[in-house]
Image 1 (cartoon, rainbow, N blue to C red):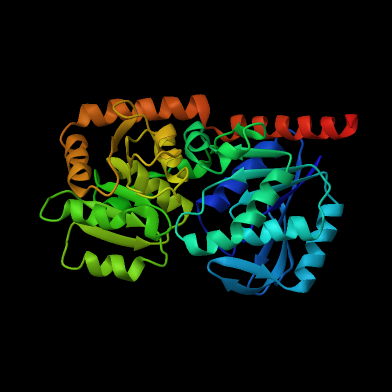
Image 2 (cartoon, rainbow, N blue to C red; image 1 turned 180 degrees about the vertical axis):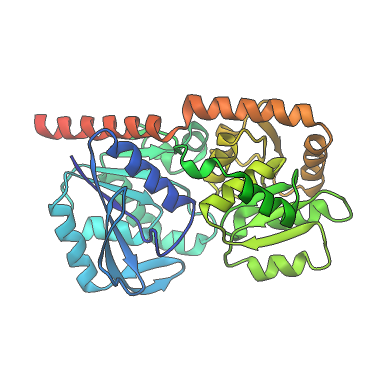
Length: 373
């Protein structure tokens, strides 16, 4: 079973939650016997082929980027068509409008899956132009996977294809990096202390970090922000003069898990539906940390159950966010109880192997359907 995963970017060019989601799907299905390949674009595409433990990455050169949509060269279109011919199933990550065009333009006839990561939220003017192609693309694939029942129920586009939609969450396997050694923990504790509130992610417009910074003004609540991104400079300006907000930039997995171990709670205040799931929440749950999220009708509230695995607050509400942070900062036993509940829910629903099995079974059903047609 050869699977071709399709998305605009992947490791090592970029680091983000969606790249990690693809890696976990590859790892999970690979443990059941799938052979995974990834078609992606790169600024240089040198080398063109990279062999990673989870998959072989085939990179074509990016020609241009328009409104965050990466577009390939004509050679990239030919490369994609060739890779499709060599695979059994094509697995797209949505949204990437250029992938819709690739699928339609090259007339893909192999069984196809779309993992629907998010509605298009911000670029509404462009959506009006893109909508006909998007709907044609979604109508042409064999299966659409929503990452949570919350998103399946609230997305106006997913509701148009009820017979094609199923739910498979994203998953995360525990790795050796999740067991940081004492020296690393001591090093980070000397630098940032412990029992802080931790955010990990790409610093984007929909992450709600404006509200997090506002929430901790004039308080002793300490926040550590891990990640880089297009909002970094503006957020640092907003936090200027606050000695309880620390920006660390990008850190590797060893350091990330050390920071998770030292933290009191993972705070993830994304306030727009562009945040469809939140891999960081799984990392926090894996490390038995309570979670704070905003209710935006997406997978964040599928991972984090209010008053069970953490606290859920209204979006864009710094006062409610501050109150939730105070509740966990001031009650160690509550934080511990919610953290253990988060770990239990992770083990029950969100391990990489469990999610990999669901995808492997889906691939098998599609191939059996094709063989019987």
